[in-house]
Length: 466
Image 1 (cartoon, rainbow, N blue to C red):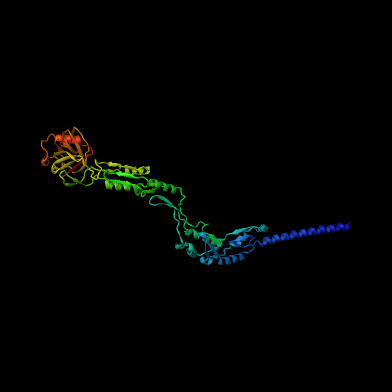
Image 2: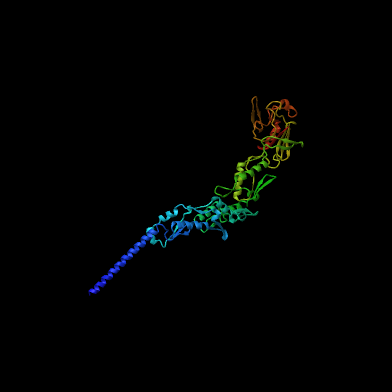
């Protein structure tokens, strides 16, 4: 019995000793691990992409230095292309800065036993350097950078095929953003990456507008709608047509990118119409009653397009989509719109021969001698030119600085100068105007004045020449 007790006590002692020994061994192992990893990287440590587990700072730096010297970066380009840039190409080198020692020092060495399954990546790209000029040359020397291998991206765009507007799809191209490409490659080399994909890194330039763009499609549709309209300007014996050939050149864009009719381009067209068809103030070649050709200058008769209003009206007409015949908006209108805007109904006054002829639709209905203003007295000569009749008044009182006259028929055409009867005269024609001329008006016999008054209308041309 006593012997059994002695055996049991000895067994417990051995167990206790073993436990103590195990604890001592464990504590020693833990302490050794803390000590060891105070100068070595923990397991699972990667520095600049290289496995540096269990390595001291000196060994790590030797490894980095060796690996940097043999380093090559694979540059993956579009469509599975691949090129390479080596450390020698760019002068890449490792520079000891003490950061490796600091990384080891900053490790949590007291929990080293938990680090066996860790995956710790350290980026010490600041310990690597390269030659900036060599890096630029290396990037420029890549095949994907050579002009003959580069296709620039092209935006999807609207193109006139001649019959319609169509969207031409974008061209993706393979042109690289030079600055970004160098930044991506240099960053990859500093981090020790084995490869870099320029497409994945968004280094390729892209079109800014694609064929699926809703605004592009809307603009194309609007262009096709706008050019369908045909607008014909009616100038009596001449016409001008606004159709696709003109409208397609008037497209512009507003601040939101929407297609509009560019007001300045439309204005230029309207201005050209004015140059061609406005007649006020122009010199005219006029065929007289006795078949002479004389030049008529001056006067206020004629046509003038109101360009501001016509620009607005034309834009509205095109945008309406309604094919139409129209006349321009006029600021001043003549009596006839033909090439010969005097037409066949007008009053002709020949100052030299003191004769007035009133034509109505080409037929002379009044032919009478006159007395016009005295050209030898300043301010009394009858002005020449082509005028529009300003008004009709019956009876009327004509006044001036030194006269007042009652007339039955008053037909002004140049301010206070007009045609009227002159009951105080018994003779007309000849050279009376040289010594008994008026203050500028055209005096006609009473019955002739009555006949003219009965047939003339405001706006009719009055042609006065010498």
